[in-house]
Length: 403
Image 1 (tube, rainbow, N blue to C red):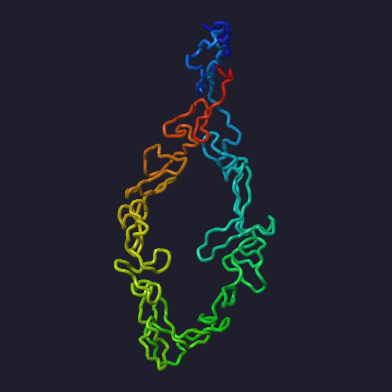
Image 2: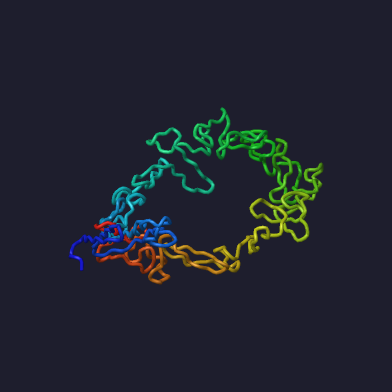
């Protein structure tokens, strides 16, 4: 028996070598593993080829680890309710609600188009451009000042068009981050228009045409009076109709008008006059405008109602059939469609440990000491052991390693 102490020493003599063994005593410890030692083909103590003394081989190293209870650097227990309820549950380096300290929240500064996020325990400012369909902005901090935030929208700013410092020429607009207009176009109220065809800016800005102001008593089917060649009063077709036989506007107003009702769907005039689809093709718009194609086939999808192409094997909006929508995602959960079957997936770091679908994936397995890393993997909660990034916290035992 060894004497009772936290560290015990045993000396053993082995054929000309002395092996010292240090045994660590710990309330609770685990063996972290063995670094294997290559003793050669004959194993430990094999005789050298020259017949000399047996070679001395380093023994395997076993590193012991004990339960740790103190929060590691960068983690804290926020008892004021600002952080997760678990011990050491707040990641002070990345948590935007507890950045660098409990309750230190990274804020949004919407009036100056800035937000902040937690990077290594510090709230760092960055430009903020929320998604706004029809009025999208791209704010940048072009003057380098913090007081006025991100002051330049590079989609429209003529001094910073597309990028900070890229100035447009005098009189040129900045539209969608590009300076100037196409040849033949003019600038009207910050937009490029074609004065030869624009019904609101015919032959100049703010010169609208009267849609009923023309020489014909009654306009042909689908037509109206608009701007053509910079002159108002010319019969034109309303989209999506078209005059494919070219008789609109003939002297005497003798015309069958806009005889093609819809160039978006007409297989003989698909996207324009004279574009005829082949046998088996239809006039469809699958993201590139009207064109002739076998609907949805090029994408490996199925044509569903309202002209939508759907992947019935993977689309949560049409899973297994055009009419099946995957529903029911709960907290920390997302819907998924796999091989035409609706499923529910947990977000990374979460799991459904109580088996109750009504509360979704309720457990944060990255911090929950009773379900650390996976459901059912419990840390020593009574001993105060926290769960850090999905692992029960351990530390090196006081006695170090066993040689």
